[in-house]
Length: 115
Image (tube, rainbow, N blue to C red; front, side, top):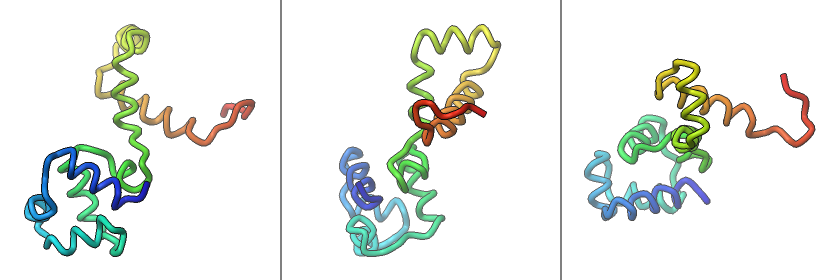
């Protein structure tokens, strides 16, 4: 799935028209249309605006990977909650730790040596 497709999907999930989202981002509807159709590359400031607006990571927008959301979901697991509680760690710190672990383990294959 491309970045444009992800933006379109997020926009529709938020029940916004292209014009509505464009207005919120401070760009033209035509520019948004080009981004959604992958006809134009966006600069980092717009990427960050989209990330903030939809409350997703830039990793998700760029690559479809949302380690932050995965980490938050993992923290909902009772076993993870017990481990975090036993370690006297805040939810925010636990999410950061899980995010780091997910990123680190992403490229590993079964049998790979752990560092």
